[in-house]
Length: 266
Ligand SMILES: NC(=O)c1ccc[n+]([C@@H]2O[C@H](COP(=O)([O-])OP(=O)(O)OC[C@H]3O[C@@H](n4cnc5c(N)ncnc54)[C@H](OP(=O)(O)O)[C@@H]3O)[C@@H](O)[C@H]2O)c1
Image 1 (tube, rainbow, N blue to C red):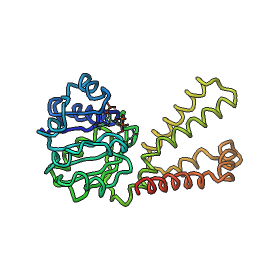
Image 2 (tube, helix red, strand yellow):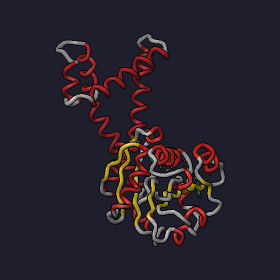
Image 3 (cartoon, protein in one colour):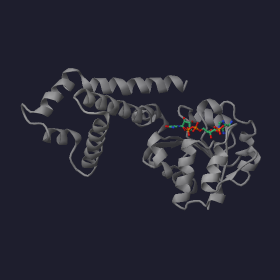
């Protein structure tokens, strides 16, 4: 069983730790965590039985892999002993916007450095995480990294050159989706439903439509056409979406998020 160390024990680290234990890739005693000034590490230890390290030395002593799961701004204040303590180890970072070149500069003697971009549905095991690495992961590291990230949901390997785009599409995607749901629920209330009725109607409509899409071999365009008859109600609504350039709005939204990711990575 690999021994895994987590720098950071917040929401994302907790989801990964719980996934490792749930899948039996690790026993709780094989996982060690450390946090900042607050009590997230001891909270996670109480909930899962993992060990809390009192120092960076203790955290890294037995670890085969070190997962960096603090906030990007906290990375700048990370203990300066980590570069030496991660010598020969595999380092996996989930920090948004922090590039492999920056990570490799800090973890200068690590065996390899991998970078992942998860998303918030990972907190309930339903996310999708993009993954790349400084050099190709050897088989054992690939298995270890997969075991760590699979607690967050699916994994997709992509070159780092696609990370600003993936940050827009799947990283920020939940935010765009929640905004769409909020707007749709507010519109349903405007049509006369109570907030509770609007919530029930809208969420089950979206959940059911996604289930239908995923269980079907048809494209979203084909499924849309099946509910659109000439002169019908769906057509009347779609005409408004088209005349107000809905698709251009979505394209501009993703482009803006990608541009911002590029700026933040500089
Ligand atoms: N949440 C998302 O949707 C999402 C999506 C994609 C990527 N990410 C990335 O995931 C990372 C973690 O996000 P999160 O939402 O899990 O954050 P979080 O809940 O705020 O957790 C951050 C953790 O880092 C710890 N920490 C702070 N300073 C530290 C230090 N100097 N040494 C060791 N640990 C330290 C914190 O400890 P205390 O609070 O106990 O001090 C806390 O356990 C971020 O880098 C983010 O960019 C998150």
